[in-house]
Length: 88
Image 1 (cartoon, rainbow, N blue to C red):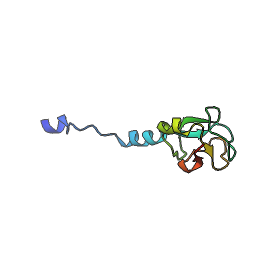
Image 2 (image 1 turned 90 degrees about the vertical axis):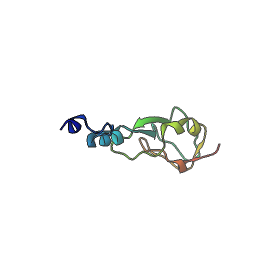
Image 3 (image 1 turned 60 degrees about the horizontal axis):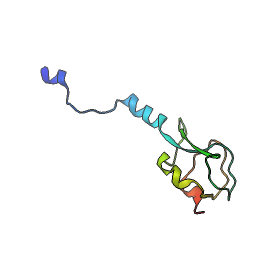
Image 4 (image 1 turned 45 degrees about the vertical axis):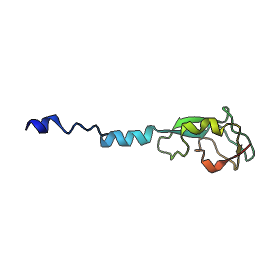
């Protein structure tokens, strides 16, 4: 009985916490329409919470994405993928 009350000592997220982690995760999104050939700047991309959308790039990729060129047209609030950027 005592062992049962003390638990295993392992810290694991609950099912609700796992769901929230996915929902609250951040990714890089277009904050205005970006045309093919346009450079990524702080004025057209930002790190936002994904919500129900599927995000692609981690916020850690943000500095590497700046000044690269968009390889396609990207709509507002659309997640930026690694393939969307070519070298400047």
